[in-house]
Length: 111
Image 1 (cartoon, rainbow, N blue to C red):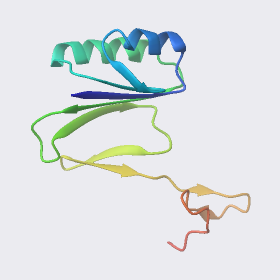
Image 2: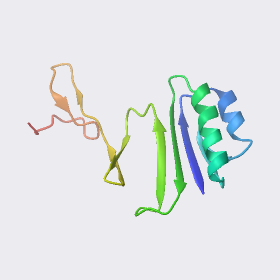
Image 3: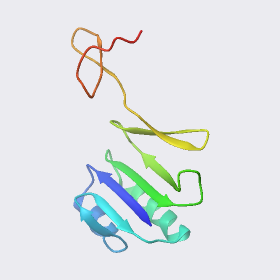
Image 4: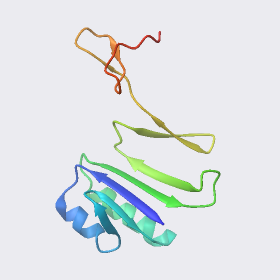
Protein backbone atom coordinates (compact mmCIF):
# COMPACT_ATOMS: atom_id res chain seq x y z
CA UNK A 1 0.00 0.00 0.00
CA UNK A 2 1.31 3.41 -0.98
CA UNK A 3 -0.12 6.82 -0.05
CA UNK A 4 0.97 10.09 -1.65
CA UNK A 5 -0.10 13.48 -0.34
CA UNK A 6 0.42 16.51 -2.56
CA UNK A 7 -0.22 20.16 -1.75
CA UNK A 8 0.10 23.21 -4.01
CA UNK A 9 0.87 21.22 -7.17
CA UNK A 10 -0.29 21.59 -10.75
CA UNK A 11 -3.42 19.81 -11.99
CA UNK A 12 -1.28 18.10 -14.62
CA UNK A 13 0.87 16.47 -11.92
CA UNK A 14 -2.26 15.22 -10.16
CA UNK A 15 -3.51 13.89 -13.49
CA UNK A 16 -0.22 12.10 -14.10
CA UNK A 17 -0.40 10.42 -10.70
CA UNK A 18 -3.96 9.25 -11.35
CA UNK A 19 -2.55 6.85 -13.96
CA UNK A 20 -1.12 4.66 -11.20
CA UNK A 21 -2.96 5.69 -8.02
CA UNK A 22 -6.54 6.54 -7.05
CA UNK A 23 -7.17 10.11 -5.88
CA UNK A 24 -9.44 9.53 -2.86
CA UNK A 25 -9.48 13.21 -1.88
CA UNK A 26 -7.95 16.29 -3.47
CA UNK A 27 -4.20 15.71 -3.39
CA UNK A 28 -4.37 12.32 -1.59
CA UNK A 29 -3.50 9.30 -3.73
CA UNK A 30 -3.65 5.62 -2.72
CA UNK A 31 -2.56 2.45 -4.48
CA UNK A 32 -0.39 -0.61 -4.48
CA UNK A 33 3.01 -0.20 -6.13
CA UNK A 34 6.20 -2.22 -6.17
CA UNK A 35 9.44 -0.54 -5.11
CA UNK A 36 10.70 0.18 -8.61
CA UNK A 37 7.49 1.88 -9.77
CA UNK A 38 7.24 3.77 -6.46
CA UNK A 39 10.75 5.21 -6.94
CA UNK A 40 10.13 6.11 -10.59
CA UNK A 41 6.90 7.91 -9.66
CA UNK A 42 8.72 9.80 -6.90
CA UNK A 43 11.46 10.93 -9.32
CA UNK A 44 8.92 11.99 -11.96
CA UNK A 45 6.87 13.98 -9.42
CA UNK A 46 9.98 15.56 -7.87
CA UNK A 47 10.98 16.91 -11.29
CA UNK A 48 7.56 18.50 -11.84
CA UNK A 49 7.14 19.76 -8.28
CA UNK A 50 7.82 23.48 -8.00
CA UNK A 51 7.09 25.00 -4.59
CA UNK A 52 4.50 22.40 -3.58
CA UNK A 53 4.74 19.72 -0.92
CA UNK A 54 4.96 15.98 -1.49
CA UNK A 55 4.91 13.07 0.96
CA UNK A 56 4.98 9.39 0.01
CA UNK A 57 4.23 6.72 2.62
CA UNK A 58 4.44 2.98 1.98
CA UNK A 59 4.12 -0.26 3.91
CA UNK A 60 7.40 -1.91 4.81
CA UNK A 61 9.01 -4.10 7.47
CA UNK A 62 9.94 -1.53 10.15
CA UNK A 63 8.93 -0.99 13.77
CA UNK A 64 6.09 1.31 12.67
CA UNK A 65 5.18 -0.80 9.63
CA UNK A 66 5.81 2.03 7.14
CA UNK A 67 8.47 4.29 5.73
CA UNK A 68 8.23 7.65 3.98
CA UNK A 69 9.86 10.26 1.78
CA UNK A 70 9.01 13.95 1.83
CA UNK A 71 9.98 17.20 0.20
CA UNK A 72 9.22 20.87 0.92
CA UNK A 73 7.26 20.13 4.12
CA UNK A 74 6.69 23.36 6.03
CA UNK A 75 3.78 22.95 8.47
CA UNK A 76 4.21 19.39 9.68
CA UNK A 77 7.78 18.23 9.18
CA UNK A 78 8.45 14.46 9.34
CA UNK A 79 11.73 13.68 11.09
CA UNK A 80 13.37 10.30 11.60
CA UNK A 81 14.72 9.69 15.10
CA UNK A 82 16.63 6.40 15.30
CA UNK A 83 14.34 4.69 12.80
CA UNK A 84 11.07 6.06 14.20
CA UNK A 85 9.16 8.72 12.24
CA UNK A 86 7.93 11.69 14.26
CA UNK A 87 6.24 14.91 13.21
CA UNK A 88 7.72 18.25 14.19
CA UNK A 89 5.43 21.26 14.45
CA UNK A 90 7.47 24.42 13.97
CA UNK A 91 7.05 27.41 16.26
CA UNK A 92 6.50 30.85 14.79
CA UNK A 93 7.06 34.33 16.14
CA UNK A 94 4.31 36.95 16.22
CA UNK A 95 4.64 40.65 15.43
CA UNK A 96 6.15 41.30 18.90
CA UNK A 97 8.87 38.71 18.14
CA UNK A 98 7.45 36.31 20.76
CA UNK A 99 7.45 32.57 20.08
CA UNK A 100 3.91 31.36 19.35
CA UNK A 101 2.64 27.78 19.35
CA UNK A 102 1.10 27.03 15.93
CA UNK A 103 -1.75 24.94 17.37
CA UNK A 104 -3.00 27.22 20.14
CA UNK A 105 -1.66 30.56 18.82
CA UNK A 106 -0.68 31.35 22.43
CA UNK A 107 2.67 32.60 23.63
CA UNK A 108 4.96 29.66 24.26
CA UNK A 109 6.34 29.44 27.81
CA UNK A 110 9.41 27.39 26.86
CA UNK A 111 12.79 29.12 27.14
